[in-house]
Length: 368
Image (cartoon, rainbow, N blue to C red):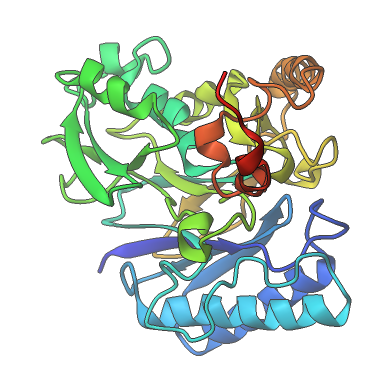
C-alpha cells in the first residue's frame, strides 16, 4: 500500500494583522485532525504555521485528491474561520474563496502539495512552507536541488542520481504543462522557470533507476489566489514537499539552496520584491514591512504512513549568516520605497489598486 503525504494550507485569520497564527487556530486544527485520525481518514498529522498561514500536514494511504482528506482539511479551515471571526482576527477566512466543497480543495483558495509514493527502507521527507510570496519562489531552490551540480554533489558523484531528473513545469497563465529532462534540456528549462511569475515547477520525477518513475519526489503548490478571486486577496504563500536520500539528493543538498536568500515576489501587499529568509517555525512571523518573505522547513522520517516527530531544520545557527544577509538585502530594497525594482513591475500589479489609478487618470493624458 502506498503512502501519501498531503500538505494543505490557508490563511483563515492573522494575529495581529498578517503577522502569525493565533494559538486557538492551532488548537482547532489539532482537535479536528485528531478526530479525523480516530475515524481512520488519516493516519497521522502535524498542525503548524508559517506567517499567518495555518498549515495542515497529513499522512495517509488514500492517495492524492482524496475527497475525505480534502473535506477534513476544508472543515478545519471553515471552523478556523469561524473561530477567527469570533476573536476578530484580521482577514478572517481570507483564503476561503468559495462556499461549497466540491470534492477537493483545488481551486477553492487553499494551497496544496501532495505526493504518493512507495516507502523505501528509510523515507525522509521535508515539508517547506513559505509566507508572503508566490509559487515561483520555489523555482530556484528546487532547480538547484535536482539539477545544479554546484549545489548537489550527488549529481556528479552518486551513480543513483547521476542521470538527472524530470521536471514538470506549469504555465499557470495558460494552464498548460510540459515535462523536461535534465541535464539534457537544462538550458530550455531555465529559459522557462527564470520567468517565475508564469512558469513554475510543479513536480520532479526520477529517471529510470532505483525509484519508480511515476512517483514524484517533489511537489509544489501552484494555486494562484487572484485567478480564483479575480482580484488581489493576498499572496499565494506556497508549500512544497521534497523527498531525499537513497537515490535522491541528500538532506543537506535539499536545504543548501536556501543558504542563498534569493529575491522573490510578494512581501508587503504582495507587491514587492524581497529576500527569502529561512527561519525556524517560532520565527516564522512576518513583521518588518509584513516580511521579509519567510520559509520554514520541517523534516519527517516517514514510517508506515505516519509522520513521527518533526525536526525544525532551519532552527540552526548554520543559517544565521543567511538571515543576516537577508536583513541586509531587505534594508537595501526598502530604501527604494515605491520605486521598482522593490515594487513589482506593472504587469504584476494588475490585480492591485494600480488599474484604478490609471482609470482615474485616463482622461487627463494628452499627446506628448
